[in-house]
Length: 238
Length: 78
Image (cartoon, rainbow over all chains, first blue to last red):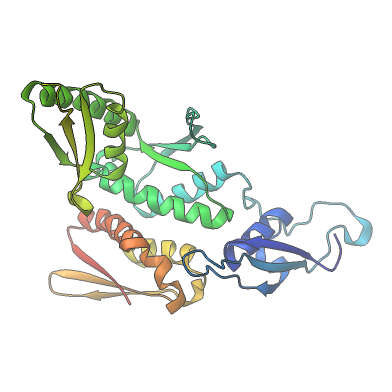
């Protein structure tokens, strides 16, 4: 490693520095940080530039000719894999929320139309119901924040899902059954069926469940948290 | 430091471009607690998020702690 330092990129200056520290396996105190370009988010993504920093190790690795691992290495190093970063940040968040939890990380079944299989972090905890919250609200908030923090730390988009004791899988099955039942009702009555308002992720499950249904179509109506799926019988099928 | 303040600070600092400018203060009212989060002006958008989604997610998480303590808490971002 030369005294000149190395240049790293990131969505933001912090992300670039984090990426550099991870790559160099050095703590922040052990490098000189020079911001070459603060980057720009641009306007509506137009003209966005990556941030650019140069990190120069203060003590060149391998100085004195001794290739010993330097004591400046952080013990629980800035993990390089998205799974480990996500697990660490989720543990931090849960601890601050007052939950003692065990987290299992796995890759989801790769969906055919998606490039990267999402990382699933399943939380096992005594306070599961509280962590899920009404209509899964708390879980959704936790997932949103975790995604932001992980993306920021990694300097790239990481597709991840937070679940609590398999709640989402069970909820998905229930929603699919509900979709089938309500579709039958729509066909029998010849009338549009209005489902309860649901978050986007759950509406998507309903739409997908009935996508290939021969006798109904689906559409979301309403705004914001009042948005709900309607199941409409196809005309001429009564 | 209170648990709520610690949580908000952890999230805001991790999100901010200028973490050193993140400040959280607690203002105790009669029935409710107000958490006041201050960030650098250029970090505002990031903390609030599209359609206020990130701010609302932080509020939802703060409510978990508030419920445990039987308190009403509002989070203001200034």
